[in-house]
Amino acid sequence: MSFFNRLRDHPYLLEVTYQVTEQVVNALQPLWRRMGYDRAEALFRTPEKIGKGAVFNCKMCGQCTLHYTGMTCPMSCPKNLRNGPCGGVRLGGYCEVDATMKCVWVEVFERSQKMKIYGDDIYQIQPPLNQQNMDRSAFMNIAFMKSAEIPEAWKTETGLSHEQK
Ligand code: SF4
Image 1 (cartoon, rainbow, N blue to C red):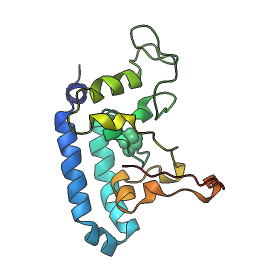
Image 2: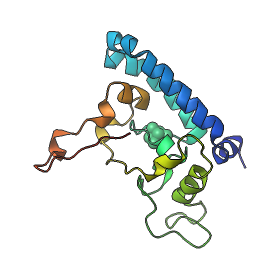
Image 3: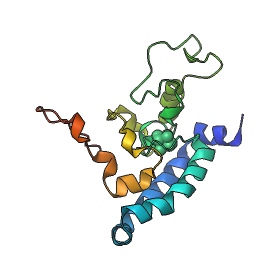
Image 4: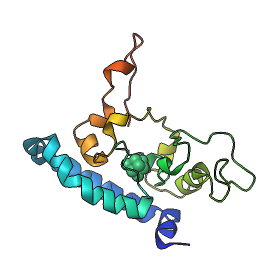
């Protein structure tokens, strides 16, 4: 088992790292505002891609769910499911599409049960992925509320909402 897999299987350190990073990003909001989205996002994009790519096999969806999904990237699911398994999980918890890999959602659930800080976040429903946020820094998308924006084409008379905790 790889070092990073072991780290994800014992997610407390990852939770704390996420929590601290989020607090720092929030505390520096005035700085990001002064820089503007384009420059701040460009500054974060590459380190985020390298760091999260190594630890989580991040696909830079720009709308990060890690603390909602057991510090496990749901974009590793061949179907990119962000709200639970597809129903085709094989015996032993293996993926329907790729029988050599564990179902990402089995890992999400198992790891979320070990999470002391964000473990209950798994019960929150995730909004659809806005592809316009792809390949952008998720931290800056959160800081500038881009991940909560609803594309015009999605709006309905009933009022779609993406509010998250
Ligand atoms: S949810 Fe998105 S931003 Fe977060 S690790 Fe996965 S691909 Fe990267």
